[in-house]
Amino acid sequence: MSFLTKPFVILFLLFSVCSFSQVKIITSKTDTISKNTIATAKPDTISHWTNKNSLGVDIAEIAFVNWSAGGTSSITGLLKGHLKRDYKDEYQVWSNELIFKYGLNKQEGVELRKTDDVFRINSTYGYRKDTLSNWYHSAKFNFNTQFSNGYNYPNTEKPISKPFAPAYTFLGVGSEYIYKAEKLNIYLSPLTLKNTMVLDQTLANQGAYGVTKATYDAQGNLITKGKKSKTELGILATSYFEREIVTNITIKNRLSLYTDYLHNFGNIDVDWQFQADFKVNNHVKANIGLNLLYDEDIEIVEIENGVSVNKGAEIQLKQSLGIGLEYNF
Image (cartoon, rainbow, N blue to C red; front, side):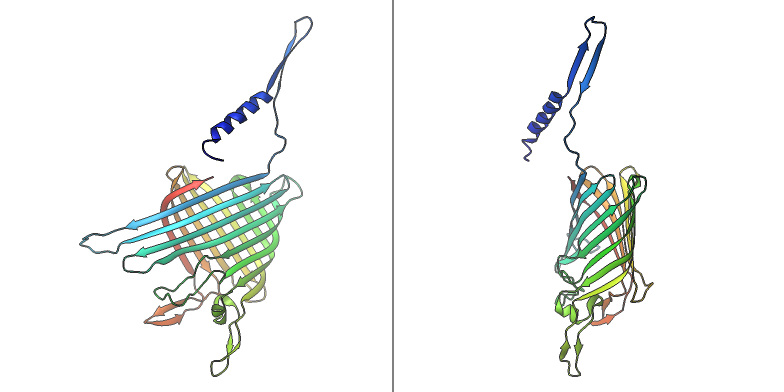
């Protein structure tokens, strides 16, 4: 629908509402009693779907010209989006969301580098037997991967990650507590399948992200290729909380905990995301983000004195601060 046709559509809707609203005056033969009856039009159907979309871009730039204290000019850009499609009636809820982020940084004298890369789909279906309970019998599906290759900079010849390498899926059943008024969701699943995919054979041969690595003979000849997937069965607990703590400042907290029954039960994979949004107006926002990850299958490799050193599984931390434009529709 174009911008120019919107006013005509609005006028048409107003005219339709007015035409369906009638006032009938019933007067008795003696003209002693009069009654007014107002009949209003009702929609033929009520949609149980709600849509919420948000697209934004954050930009940070710093430039130096003859700056005596020194410094490196740089520019950073981040494109992000959050698309939601939710269904809700008295007994069912079905929540779907797509989250994506992609950021780049360019410094003077340094190649273009990736700063953020997220592609995530979440879908949860719930059913309850009565309208008094906030607990639902639920099924949940999550998918997470990235858009482009990742590198251990400054080495840009050997990618340490690629699209679908890794990619994670979670599929399980359990119970979910939904308190709409407080924007609080808690999900507990005793049966969740976690599948880790590494569809790049080079990374799979290295045993990246926990898949079974390739085997070689004494001369270094390949005997068996590395597996491109790994499946686990375990317990998943997630929570989401959103609240406007003061006017125009909203916090969002998302936590995911997973442990496998067969492999080191009790060793918990953690994905914690926290974000604070500061609203300037309807289209300008600032935000602070924090993402903490721990997965025993992800080994951290660092370059020390030109040599790659495997430091094993460690806590990963990502912090972000941005201001930019956001469009909601």
